[in-house]
Structures are given as C-alpha cells and as structure tokens.
Amino acid sequence: MPMIQFRSRPGILDLGWGHPRPELLPVEAWAAASAAASREFGWQQLTYGDARGPAPLLDWLTAHLGDSTPEQLFVTGGASHGLALVASLLAGPGDVILVDSPSYHLAFPIFTDTGATVLRAPADADGVDPAALAEMLDGPRVRLLYLVPTFANPTGRSLPPDRRRALVELARRTGLTIVEDDTYRELCYDGQAPPSLWRLSGGEGVVRVGTFAKTVAPGLRLGWINADPALITRLATLGYVHSGGGVNHSVATTMYCFGASGAYQRHLDAVRAEYRRQRDALVSAVREFLPVEAPGGGWFLWAALPPGVSATHLLARAERHGTSFLPGPSFYVDGAGGDDRIRLCFSQLPPADLAEAAARLGTVLVSPR
Ligand SMILES: Cc1ncc(COP(=O)(O)O)c(C=O)c1O
Image (cartoon, rainbow, N blue to C red):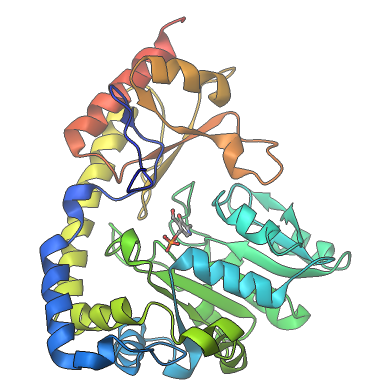
C-alpha cells in the first residue's frame, strides 16, 4: 500500500500537482519543535485537547494573524477540514452553495458532500461580479459563496479591492456567508498580500479558513477557522469534538512551539524565497512560447493556450513528451469552460526541472503530433 498521496510517474516532470517541493519541508526544525513541545507540555501534549485548540496556539495565532480574537478561532485538521465543517453547519439539502469560476476544484466535492447544490457564481476576468451575484440571491436558497480571493488556485490572481469591499457589503446586507479560503496568503512574493475579506468585514458575513499545509507541511493536517464567536461555539460543541477533544491536539501544541520559537518565520522567509525563484523560473520559461501573467503569490500559473488548442487534448500529448498539467475545465464546477487554459504548478520542482518541463510543453505546442 502506498504511503503518500503523490505518485511520481517515471519520465514525467509534473506541473499538475499542487504539492510542496519535498526538500523544502522542515524535517529537522519540526523535530526540534516536537521535542520542545514534549519538554514544555509533558503529558498535557498527549491527552485530550481543549475543544477550540490549545490556548498557547490560539494566543500565538491571534498575535500572528493580527485580525481576530481567540474567541474567533477554531483549530482544524487543515483547510479542507475547515471547509467541510463550515459547509456542513451552514448548508444542506435544498440549499445552494456558489463557487467562483474557475476555482479550487477539490473544494467542489467537499460542498456536494453536504447535500447542497453547488453552482457557479457569476464571474468575469476579475472574479465574482457583485452586481450579478446580488441578482442571483433573489432566487434559490443561496447559503454560501466560496472564494479563494488571494493568490487563487488555479489563477494565481487576487480579487480587486473594489470587489472585495462590494462582496463584503453584499454579505452584510443579505445574510449570505462568504467562505474565504485564505490558503495562500502568506506565500506572497512581491510585497504585501491584499487585506482579507475577513479583515474588511470585521468578522460579519465572512468565515475564513486558513492552513499550515502550504507554509509548513500538508502532513501536519493543521489549520484554523476564523468566524464569529457564535459559530465557533457551534464548532466547539459538535459531538465529535465533545467526544474526542480539540482537533489534532499534539500537532497543534508542536505548531505553537514552531511558531513561538521563531522557526515558523525563518521557515516562511526561506520557502518564500525558494518559491519566488521557482515562480520566476517557470514564468520565464513559459513566456518563450505563451504569454503568461506572473502571480504575486501562491503556487500557480494560469496560462492561455493559442487559439484552437484544447487543453484536454493537449494533456495526452504533453504526457507523451514527459510533462503534465491540469486542464482548465477541471476548475469549473459544471465542467463548462476553461478548455483554452491550463494550470501549471511551480511548487513541486526545482528551477531547472521547471524550465525543462516548460521546454517539453513548448515542444508539444509547436509539434503537430
Ligand atoms: C485553495 C486551496 N484550499 C485548500 C487546499 C487544501 O488545504 P489543506 O491541505 O489544508 O486541507 C488547497 C490545496 O491545494 C488549496 O489550493
């Protein structure tokens, strides 16, 4: 049986998977934090944890985020878990959950698991269109709007400030809840990330999910939810939390030591520099044959194909030439649209391999077979 989710395919330099580069995972620094947590917390690291997460981590995270109180925090097993929890509390059969298009495709089944209907929110090249969305809210029971507004997966783009403000205002006015997936906020390469919808809203009408999967390691299965204290109380009194205590308590206490010791900031600075180099390597190699925007953060390029080239058809040919990517239609909840786009991920390979992967893709685009 395999041990990990990613399976490398011999001969393929894969730009499809959004996974970290293995050499950038902080194996030794995490081991040191784990030993420090054992020393500092002893048996308390190994018993049931407090429902919302261990107080030291909540306090560190509150100071680190700078835009929420400990009462607005709930520790989760990562962003996916946060999305599943929020969606199952706020939507169900008969409800509608709207998603950006394109958007993070693996969130779609998390939402359909609730029994709700998942539909496209009206969007243009800048992202979800607040005026068109307002009209949709007159119709069926739209409960949630899911967005990755900062360094999005798959586009790498960020929602413009006026749209952020308009969507927050719309949520406040209508009772719609925006679920803001802030997974890539801290992986910014050119200055500051834009203010989150959570921050702009003052906590009203927006629930934010965050994760340490991209900044530290996905295997931690550790993240958080920011929400108003009433929703946090509902999360903290869920049956399985009452029975099993706070989520992933032992890793959460280690994360506290990793953060409070300064190891988190050192690691973040180091991986930011590496991912910036990787972004630059892939952008400049792809620009040899396709125009592509350099994202200010995150892990993805969203490349437009030459007229008449289908992303879906291109994939099989690319794999014959030793590279891979995800075709655009994967990121549309109804599968309609995006066949003129491909998502290229620069997180997993070092710069030289990214350049080689891009060169192989370039060869496919000019070769007739
Ligand atoms: C936008 C987005 N949200 C959530 C996730 C999953 O996060 P986690 O590993 O914390 O569940 C990913 C991972 O690719 C992602 O791109």
